Image 1 (cartoon, rainbow, N blue to C red):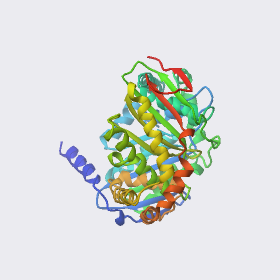
Image 2: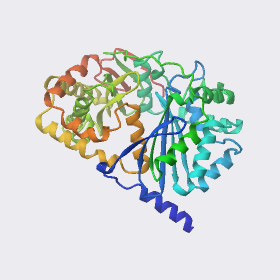
Image 3: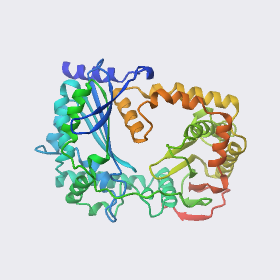
Image 4: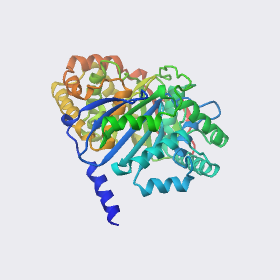
Length: 445
């Protein structure tokens, strides 16, 4: 019991706020040429490693939709000499956190370990990437779990709205597919398919790595070669084309016998690499990203009580971008709520933000960021995203200045560029009243 308490205490200690100004990022290149960024910190004996294979899993083969996600669910279900139970026991006995995730643009991995368990952690990670077993029992168990989650989600109006939006915005493109696959495609994925995915997708040329915690640059360099060095030099990942959202100006209604209507709307957004990203971030905070301080919450919820929550957000993908808004309301008020949201969309485009709104947004966006650096693992995750976004190793030092440099004129220019109510793709799920649908769809029961 004493050992368990000690481990828990160390893990809790690792989740303390780290001042942004205390962060020094070091570029590490292994003897084998694998690069990583590192925030070295020996105050707490925790090491976090985050990585991504860019492009991997972004496009599953036809008829094998859900392949990358099933691989992510099964990679830690046995590897090398260890079957699923033995592998899980070694992770648990050594307090090692190892997980994988298939995203729309990359296949990611995450490792968290105590410093004195690093050798075991790095070896288990290496095995999971280079020698996954994909035993039939483990594959069937994970497949059943994914199928169960898909069936359950089909009864969720929020899920139905998201799927309808993305399938309409990106027809025939990987972004329009359900990353977990379908009830029809999942049964056809075999262990050999999973082995083939790993063999062709985990190339060192697509690998991006970040680390934080109790490890030196020299040790990290050796670790990179140990964990990733045996992987193929290049990946055979199919290219994903850029895509512009379709269905602009449509209002789709999926009829469901629910008491409330889920609303989701969006249109082309702004890429993370665009210099106007920071002006768009300020704009979005004022429009609907600032919680109770945002215009959408003020107009839709506070003044009229039409929704418990309404919001906006920016999505930047590798091959597309969206500016989105959403919320829910009672069916009888759906038309009114939707009209107000579109009015606020237009007001932002026409008038931009006030000086007070601009100042408040900057204060929040700069002041809240250090709170995201709340743990060793969080720091590694942010480093990985900065690397993937090609923002530069000095980005954390420049971020506040980039946000504080945004002017009212910048925000209005970007709002006029992005926000056009008549071009919104709008999806509603429920029994909305007062809505002029361009297309009505059977949303099921």
